[in-house]
Length: 251
Image (cartoon, rainbow, N blue to C red):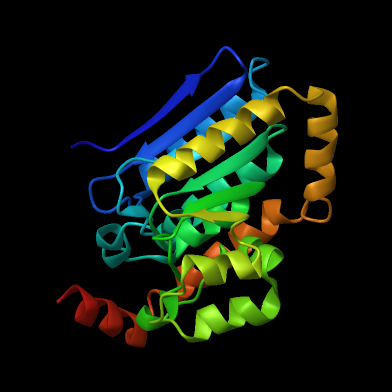
């Protein structure tokens, strides 16, 4: 199957954005760029009252950024461009005037956790464990860190970051505030998500837009912060220790 990003509108004003990549939804730069642009375009569409952000497939919501592309980075400029991918998507969610609902049907790793954290309200299944594995290859979750820390707090973010090999359960993620609810199956998740989306779409759209501003107040500096963080990762990825770790992991 080929990678894609799609957007569909319902008559109720619910826009569903779906992304997919056959490698467990690990996202290359071009696909992240397309996803960010789609979120921005859909959010500006006057038909849109609520956005549902989801991925294709059942087992993995998002495995982060493309490891193959990561391993091919040779300059800091390339590193900055690569690590800016999730910065663009997070900022697109943050800056959208529409409420963004997250649908996390499976595991989320690295940037995938950042995507879940960038939504305004996130629902998941019991299979939606989370992990921040960046330290294993000599970098850190710098770009997605602000979004994750904003949702779960410094203590839980530090725990995830330093225990880089550990998957934390969906119930743990709910307890920390990343997920609002956790369901036993994808069917139950989709039913609850559809009910919530329709309910939100029936509310005063101006009230929702103003609430969105309130939710994200104090994050305006992310327009520069996340790219500064991307530059940090772009520098680290060229270090001898990180290159060795990437090569070992790839082998």
